[in-house]
Length: 284
View 1: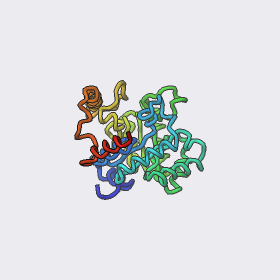
View 2: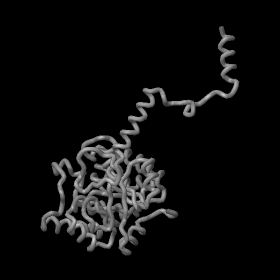
View 3: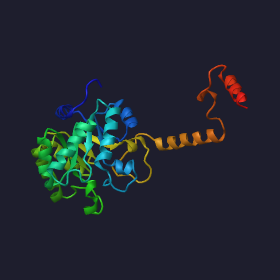
């Protein structure tokens, strides 16, 4: 990848019918690896509160935490189109806060697109951030930041009434200035309709194959996560077992005194050990 990918490249992919590949990751090392694959977008999601910090929800993610991770990912993947996730309370308190925090992602972390979980109430926020010159990805469908109000997260757009409202919301967000959409956990038929009806790129997170692109979190792709995963998640590797085996081999080598060996240790220069011994003997 010779040139940095931008929102214009994503728009061109939609227009030309090329699928957009997005990965959610949270650290420099993983970003370096993602950048060596044919990936268009990295999303630094507030799901890091769960994946990295072990919380039950995304709500504990803070602006400073998200900035720190986004900056690290940008260093690891300088040419990939970078999307930063606005965490809980970074935009809910008003337009001025939203613009300030979105701007922090751009200035301090090198983000190109800012993702905001939206309902119709946040149309003014999307418009204001977009008018400030910042590209917005409006996140609709399942919205993890609404967990306290919703009680639990469930598939969206599964009835005609709700689907109609979701389609209208998508169109309103685009009219407000959103340059892209992320549709999470929504009935595949509805997500496909949204994709057909709007001119901006639409990324699916568990919303079927009819969108312009797909996103999954890196640990799921690699098969690093254990336990129950979302219905839409698929692993393309089995690194959890390989990782455990590597740690176990490391443990055995230490207990067996086979690591570190001479090759993996530093040594004094020739003749210096004898000189040191002489110094020590002279002290006595």
